Length: 531
Image (cartoon, rainbow, N blue to C red; front, side):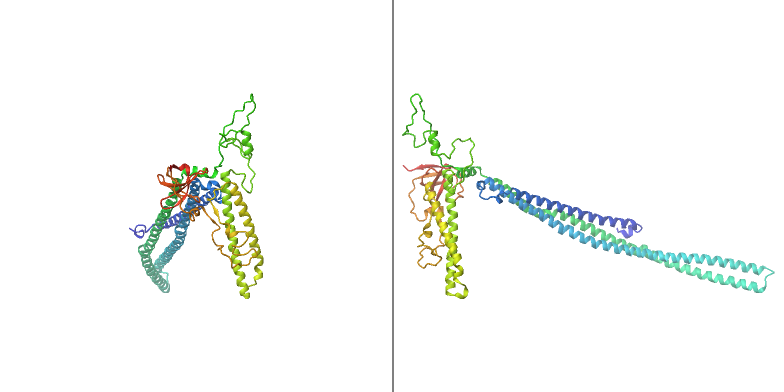
């Protein structure tokens, strides 16, 4: 069934329906555009939200950064940022594949529809013009035939009139004959116009208009099919990014499962352990016998009373729940508890050593450049490097001084001697082992490569030493990741050899069967020492 056959007389209905179909396409395009705006705004809000709560941007050195719960939260924020990117991709694809494509297609079918309607209008105007000619011919025929009838009656009346002359009768007959001839011509013209109109009308209703209506039907069906594809794309566009969105959600789930409350507790201990011993018992002071200020030999070296506690640790408050005033920050970190002070001093030493190595490398490069300039003056003036060499030498001397200062403070803080073994022989003050002398000149007597590591980290403790005999064994009660420098990972139930006992800082040095050594938290294992 087609429109040309079934709807041959419904031109207005077809015109209205096709116009309504185009308006539906426009409405759908507008709907998708508003959806893309929602997606873009949603993605923007998600990105702003992730940025707002991503504390990592403000300070990466915060103590909380090592907590698994904190790290998992950062992973969630990163996944949400990726999720926002997928929402933006949905908006972009919908705009390209639906809105832009349908808008272009809409312009094409609008023009095509306009062409068909103009053809229909032109055919209608042609038929109307032929009909006007037919009507005019008909009216002329009617008028001339009446004139012919009147002329014939007048001629007959004149012929019967006895008073009429022969000339009058002849003239009346000629007039009647002429009118009859004109009426006959008008009749023939009317018949021809009628035949022409009927032929054009038949062509109009059985050929021209059905063909145009069928073209409009094909156009409308193509429009509906294209719109249906747009509806499918509305769903498929989101389906295509669902696997990636699913990975984002899986990443959030994984971040939640990576939270390890036990490890977080151990990180808190490691970061905040003060190293102080608990206060000893206060002695009974018998005022009836006089205050006993003698020291007890069985006190194990702990303070004997509050005044002695305060005299030994004036900057420390041993009342757990009292408000603590914010300590004054000092360069030697003396405001920190012993354990935390050692860690901060070791950290600062590492930073200084890295800076010192950088300056030494630069000094070496400048010295080589100066040698090249001296041998090849056309390449540059050696004197132009003097200021840079002098500045680098001053920086090296300054960093050496800071290095010695912090090493002294670390020794005073009771730092473990084998925790970080800083190799200062490459930077000694006499310059005998420097790649460059303090004045920036290159020394051929240098025996030490300045590009060597300035310091050996935790794991270097065991490279140059003979393996010491184990003093016992230990069994892991919990998993330990060993993420910090110098530590070693272990799994629950793993048996390790004890190389060095806990020296009071909560760490025990152990060794695996393959020779790997490192420190583990003492509270994570059960230890059995050899007798």
